[in-house]
Amino acid sequence: MSRRPVAQINLAALRHNLQRVQHLAPASKILAVLKANAYGHGLVQVAQALTGADAFAVARIDEALALRTAGIVKPIVLLEGFYEAAELPILLANNLQTIVHNELQLQALEQTELEGQLKVWLKIDTGMHRLGIAPQQFNEFYRRLWQCPTVQPGIRLMSHFCCADMPGSAKTGQQLAQFQQLCADKAEQRSLANSAAIICLPQSHGDWVRPGLMLHGISPLPDQQGQHHQLQPVMRLSSRLIAMRKIQPGDTVGYGANWQTEKATWVGVIAIGYGDGYPRHAVNGTPVWLAGREVQLIGRVSMDMITVNLGPEPMESIGAEAVLWGPELAIERVAHCADTIPYELLCNITPRVDYQYLTV
Image (tube, rainbow, N blue to C red):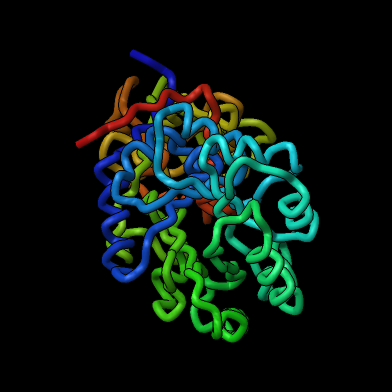
């Protein structure tokens, strides 16, 4: 019996979720966002499975080069762009596309001699105030990029919503209106919609949509689950019950003795902890799916183990499978109990977990 936690990645569910994006945004091309190891699912394996995507987006150049090394030939866009001019020949040699979001990047493109031209996306800050040029800089950047000999004709225009996961937000409407106004007389392709906007804001879809979280079967909207959008969870994180013990009224469990039983009950120990990426701040009562029923976390999460309340007459035995999240238990529920978001849970999975890829 292996005591190593397992993350099963269902590639059929991944492809199903891509089809849902295509259904929701039928007139748009799909720039599948695979940053942070494809949200913890495996960068190369996910890219290889998403044959229906039109292009891939990653945050940094090392992620893009890993895809190229694995034989991925689809267009790849660097969401953070390049960091220094010395990277530009690498981008050109590997057919990588870059976002431009500041003056230094534009100057590097203007001042570097290349034996070819790069595909460029111009990012406009319409209110996120993270990356992107100010709206008043748009006309100048647009003109200079068109005149730059190292830039392919036909730049692409993009921005990013900060409140798309809050349906009806006035901020989202303001961002959309400003972006549309800036680009009104431009013929270039546009991209604005992330996962939440793909679901809630069809008027923002444009030429390219950028799904990330929803590809992995998770709702980008608070208080909702992937099933509400006909998405299927891609990751199933599981482990095993490795110990059981009966405790008496007044006994406490775990570090800090922060859980105490009022009646005799059985405690189960499951081989997973924050050393594997399970959230340390999950509270008492966090659900765990154990051998066909839901039990509750009790006591603090340890580095290698968690403890659950099995009740006065447990049905399980040592070796029983425990699902921490997956089709049986929505990750959104676990994230809520840990006062975090599903993104963080997925990205925090550590190398101690065994990844298994299912194709059917």
